[in-house]
Length: 187
Image 1 (spheres, one colour):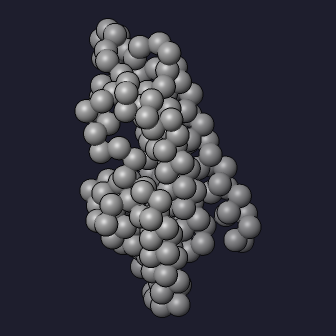
Image 2: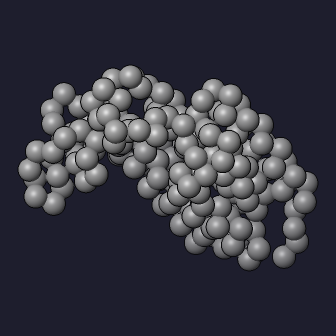
């Protein structure tokens, strides 16, 4: 194992700059910016370009969707969307922490391919969840609780819509395509 200090430093710089821009645009709280720096530095620094750019694809697409029709989402779900589009430390670590941990293990263990596959799964999952939440709420039909199929209020945890299911699949597919493309370019 050899630490790639220039890449770790580049990861720190990129994540600080991207996180700072997201903070200024209202996508992150100050603690969310810290979370972006932590996850971005570890992901890029120990995983490399493919890992770091995949994380950025998740973050940028999710940030855009968080702001998309924000007033309408707030009107539909009210207090269930009370945090709004600004992500805090807990949210950035919830979405990026597992991927960052996998990147750290990947970089410290001679880059086993199984960890890249796990990273792909983690990033596809968090992207699918975020996209489903951000777009599913906009469905014209009321959501149904996945466990009982009864109609629930928009924004209810476990409520699903066709919009949300489509968005979920699209988000996961986007991550898969981005990762596949970046892996092919990096080799």
